[in-house]
Length: 255
Ligand code: G
Ligand code: G
Ligand code: MN
Ligand code: NA
Image (tube, rainbow, N blue to C red; front, top):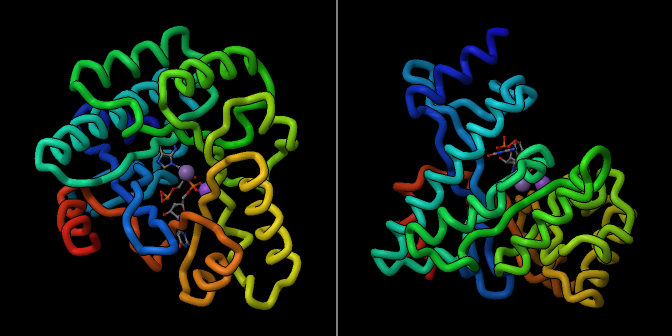
């Protein structure tokens, strides 16, 4: 298809890059880390969102290549920031069930970190609830456990929207839960969303899971989350995903 050839072209010409969206500690405003979000820098049409190459994620070989490209670039960016003494915290990268089912995914990831002498706690992996379901869940579990045991924290993305049951939080090594941004939308007017958010925050405190609220756009949302002791937040209020080159300035102005 057209999307597949676009993606192949983008990969072959180095146009697929991670952009970095800040994640902040709500009580201080300090940048705690970043989520890496794929962007395709089109030579003439500007920066494209992942949706423009969605079909590429269905082609497993291409999807794995995209993940490798993202990981490689994220590691290089982190190495540069460390060398400059920039306190970037961590970078969370999105991975799929298909990435995690690869025979040696976690080994390769750990080897790549070692090659650049990067500490394990500077990288996190983000998965959605769907990785727990379906074919090969035992391989996914094994890979996540290996990463978690090596000190790479595992974040569960889009929490509350999928099919995950609470027992997945017990079965899989989940260190971080990200509350899906749909619960923050309209939330000043929606007592049900507020109740869900409060419940997930409390669940996090009881299970010793770090909670990140996604999609924070207003000070009012921030205030509410703070009053409920939500620790971390991410959203346009703090910044959109930005190119690696802009990260140093963000870190030096917001510390
Ligand atoms: O900004 P935003 O349009 O980037 O992201 C759209 C969707 O694409 C999100 O659900 C996000 O999790 C997903 N996404 C962003 N970057 C990556 C990536 O590197 N790999 C995978 N598998 N998904 C990504
Ligand atoms: O599925 P995942 O949570 O990885 O996707 C993140 C997506 O949400 C990206 O497309 C990102 O650009 C978008 N996003 C991040 N912060 C906000 C926000 O505050 N508001 C909205 N509407 N989208 C956001
Ligand atoms: Mn994500
Ligand atoms: Na999300």
